[in-house]
Image (cartoon, rainbow, N blue to C red; front, side, top):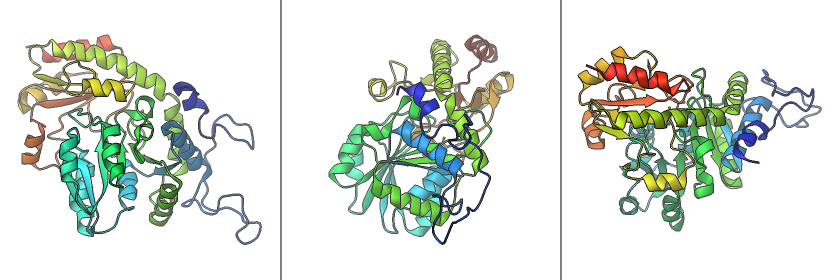
Length: 378
Ligand SMILES: *Cc1c(COP(=O)(O)O)cnc(C)c1O
């Protein structure tokens, strides 16, 4: 199956009981047993629910893994995966990882004895040098938020597997439509499905896919034991969103390229970060590793004042956190998504006060560019 066909025909399409072409919402908590322990595969909806299972099978197929899992948010999925480790274990993470991932490590998991080091994972030598005797995993986000740094997944897998470590990839930005980390050697892939997979700014959800039966058993045990599952209604909504992922990602890609072309030649825009740009430091790697460059662009307008002025003049870019939806969104990472990261650290990473991030939607590119043109004019 090719990619767009798989979005429609992957997983468990429809309902075998009635012929309904859409998976029904199984709004149910418990299931009748014929006799003790004899049932049709479902006992209790924390353990398994048919609508959630259809979604889990779909993401498993899209990421070409062994088993998929749906959680109540991206952070719940990330938390569940880190629960695979023990107190005293150590994890290496991409340095400009999502703010919430930085926060859960430094403020929550650290209290439970899980150790972490944040390292520039675009630098394989730096990664090797940061590995400790108690390191259990390399956790990467690629491309990153908001600077769009690209890490070589295959190189990380080679380093990790020589030492028996797991490679975990947050694939939220690229989506399974453009990038499949498991086929590049990763062991676990994570998604904030709140973003592109849902795609319509109408739900919060997280997904994980693992590449082995052993990890599948371990993660299912945690999903059931901890219980941060996605409900049937949101599972259904997410399946519906995923059906148009290909159409949306292609439209977003076209718009993003047109906007990047406009921004790079604008004299008020200092620096444009986009993996599709020839001058992006990992452009060649991005072209090899992914099928598309995505819809997130960040650029510097020089100061927080200039950023605020730009935001105040735009009509079609909604000022909001989050990304990956049909409508174009704009944010100032230093003041919003990355506010939980200490200021000195933001400066080290290059998240300057004038850095603006846009998440390109599926509106007409001409309208988006005219909007930016007017807002950047004197
Ligand atoms: C939003 C996001 C998360 C967290 O997901 P939620 O659904 O908001 O809990 C994790 N990683 C990345 C890259 C994100 O953009």
